Length: 210
Image 1 (tube, rainbow, N blue to C red):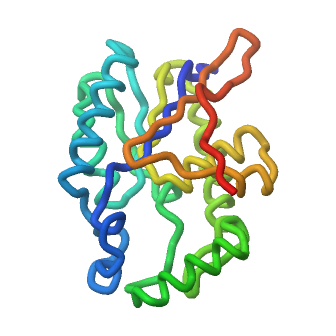
Image 2 (image 1 turned 90 degrees about the horizontal axis):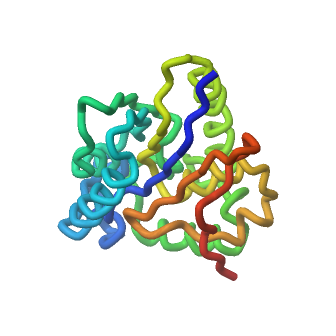
């Protein structure tokens, strides 16, 4: 069994939806692209990751959304050292289809009041549904760890909520703990580090909100 030394999670760079809510009325969530600022955030994160990984191999799992693929490309990791797998279970929490902007604002307010884990968007998912997807992905991940030649680094290019849910599932956090945490900024990263005792620890905590 070759457990990776690092599991790095990165949120995509700033996308069109992060700066213009009305775009959800015209463009599907999965098709939104990075802004100029988002591209710069991805390039900056790429410099950090290349320094972190050095000449070591990396297994990448990327959400199928346009903005996550664009983020991955702008990281400019060495293709000779990287193996990439698209992973639909790492997609953003589903909101449904094209959305009315006023309904988006109303539902986001309701979600803040009801709870991000349990609230289900109309025709979409709850955080709990996305949590179940992450749990199913864990089965694949741990099965892949069984390969003797598995790379020493894993990189997940995904979304802010998915990063929190991944850590919630990995570290067995409670729902209350999850609800108290904020998404990282666009282009933000968290790393799970393998210790000498065989356990993983988070390199730094998520910010908290009330």
